[in-house]
Image 1 (tube, one colour):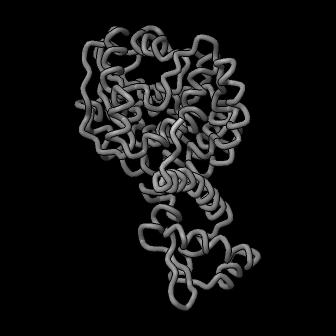
Image 2 (cartoon, rainbow, N blue to C red):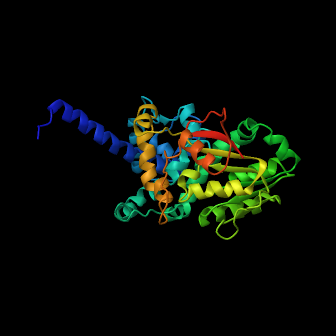
Length: 357
């Protein structure tokens, strides 16, 4: 075996430990969110000393100081010559503005649950069987909710639904609709409020997500929405639905092929399915070359998406980057759909498709 080149060894070691730095800093981002540090910095309206930040948050200054040093070293917060730390406008949007479409704390919210999955998946490597989303506990459901709802609140009604030809007038007139993999129900409730003449049913197998959806439905006062576990209340099979949506969930399913056939049985001959899933390419080489977040995606897949997709015996295991456009075209055609069109919707992570019988 050849001895490593000293310079190449240094660079490789740096590359390896830069990954560990990212993991440590991700943990600090989680703490900044959970402890209200970013929110306090935003509310201050300007840079703070760590003593001022500690006082505002009721935390111990020494711990706040070390956290701030990590964040400044990672160039996530600013530091001024007098030792004051602050947030750029971009940092305010991502760290401390849940109403902003760029808000990014959802994935960091569920970081402890995601990393705890490292304990579970070691056995999965031996058995081949993964773990569903409820294995991440109630905070896993909250994290997914916080991940998707900010963008949806800004874009679902004004951008996404109008991109599907003829859909908005149909919903305005009154339609039967279903959102499969609805999670905590954010998209269902947005659409139900916007289109009071239509009826929306959300379906999910996560008991934690359905519990949150039920609470949000009660708080909303809406009467044209409901939520179901499809194992107890199956999707209709009488071609009665005008509109079906699936947001970022087909690649997580143990039986996506079976689900696509179920959608085909549920949808009217002139109905439309809005299929939203992760932007993926057909090969590892393409994903690595064109997606700077490919390594993150494959890692999340092991701990979450593929694990869910293999959580039952015989699961198909698509995983995070498993539903490329070509794969989606082939699978939907095999399920009996004849029209497949990529929509002109700009999203950093997802692709949007219009699928019709």
